[in-house]
Length: 378
Image (cartoon, rainbow, N blue to C red; front, side):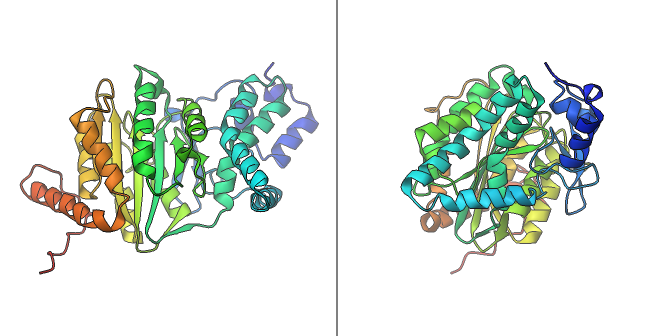
């Protein structure tokens, strides 16, 4: 049975408040079995850069009061950091330890989810939350990655609307089809699902998607169980926290069925991509977008223009995903070729030049954050 805040003893409340740093609302929303009603079903926190952000259920490993950092940017407690560092270093001592550590990371989101949903005692729910966030803790304690040649991250829309009308099943089908082209010759790829807050499913140093079991775990964890759609601002903050410009290309793939509903003002809706791209471009990142929109989404043409402007690709799945269709083959081919850094550089330039011609002719939207390509060298 769920235990609500008012049923706790004074000692238990003190432990939750001072030990876990949970508020009454966070306890009842997570452990008490109910959800606290928030505007747009998004909680509000404060990012380390000072911007207001929104988040979902509290993270045991990095929970703070409302005036502290959010779960996306905050660092885990010292004991958690030390424990994760020891575990991560232990995996390098033997092949068996490495395989065990990899299995723990891959299964953590599912095991944690089971404990949170099925645990009959608050302690099991707390442990479940901690286990569920294990990949995120590993990700947080790792140093930012310098993008020297190419890095890849997939963002998966985990909002409840993905469970309606078969959108999640079509998203799974797209992910299965795109995995091999995306990872050809490059086994590691970060995976983050997002709803009202981001949840890391695969840390950046992991090759989970390159194996059938790991890919299946990612699909099972991508279940539409998050709140809201916190996308553009989350991606900006995530990239800034986890990567550093290094002269290479950062491939970002997003699979979504709608607009951003939870980001701060300016980042809401389909227009929210603009402040994100301004910030990332100004920071020195070279972003290449590969975007999949599930269903009929208002303003989805702007998603296509974003992908074209960065030399990436776009796919609209309005009904059922057909891997053999012309649009799907074109999308998957572009994704696969984007991993060929030397050979694809010319093709990417052609795609961007084609976008600029179409933008001048009024067939594509012009973005004020996009720097014009230099003229071709003679």
